[in-house]
Image (tube, rainbow, N blue to C red; front, side, top):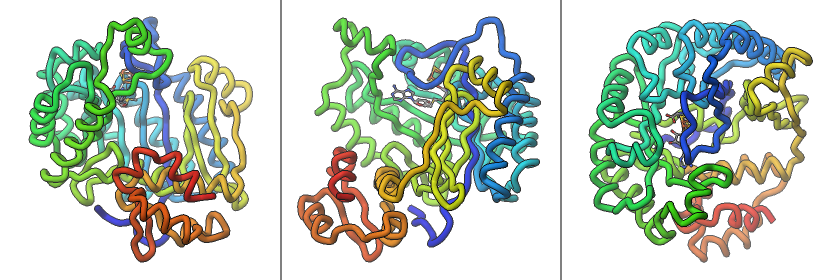
Length: 386
Ligand SMILES: C[S@@+](CC[C@H](N)C(=O)[O-])C[C@H]1O[C@@H](n2cnc3c(N)ncnc32)[C@H](O)[C@@H]1O
Ligand code: SF4
């Protein structure tokens, strides 16, 4: 993969659109269904105000990436997307080559809408395909079928310079053979980027209740690990190796916005339930906003932002976060960056021990987690930073 150049990991803006046409039974993202419709103009006004608040705190910056995520942002009218992007450009300097991504759901994809997003400045789309067989799409509670997913992929490829799609694997009853076939089709269909997520059964979701009641059988850990290994080898052989635990790309086609997170760059997060991390007076602040859309809307009306909390990180917290994010990447972390964040180097004896145990691999100026290390990432970070 493209290894991080020395210097600035970038500055991104994340905008969260918290609405979906229906709630998928496995999903615990901050997404809500509003059968009566959504007042998009009211949300644009609130985003405009909250972004101005963040601009007053970050100062003038060059924006390298913008990501409109959700929820289902492709439910937005193109004029709404255009207004949001115009607002970001009015407040900060958006780089001429900025990556501007929107997430889309195949069931809400229309040619005209896609053309509108493209005209608004979007240059990358990330599609939630989830499965390439109809029975599993149904079991996942999706509103689209495979034919619709294929049409959405083709349309995205025809409309945007770059695209990616998501699949969920380790589904109930999924065999390695079936997943391998689907992966092969995904690789044949995909341009150059795939996000391949192992199904997680999150507490509070209908899938969780079904599993507890014995009505949903997800693959046992050994089978899930087998499917993970298969994912790694098939994508590697096809020239789309994992550059992050669940993200695969041809070299150069990585998601630049997500790299800002993983390389521990700075980003503003606006909208209901959005997180941000950026430097203010030389220290990294963490921000998060009200999750409930209408609560966020009234908070912005009252205070000019929907912040529900935030904190200033100390050096060791920053350094730990850098490890936690960076060790997800195949390129790993830079030891000099760790040192400058933590104010001290990593303990060489501890690093040597973890290398002997096969959990990390050390290069001249980088450390990366091995496949075994990735499986115990939290413990690895705790051990490495002690
Ligand atoms: C916030 S969703 C946005 C995409 C869009 N809303 C859609 O579903 O088509 C981002 C991705 O997270 C993944 N995801 C959501 N819940 C998951 C779960 N419980 N386990 C694994 N992946 C999940 C899905 O692949 C989904 O496309
Ligand atoms: S998976 Fe996507 S479409 Fe389904 S509820 Fe979550 S955010 Fe909405």
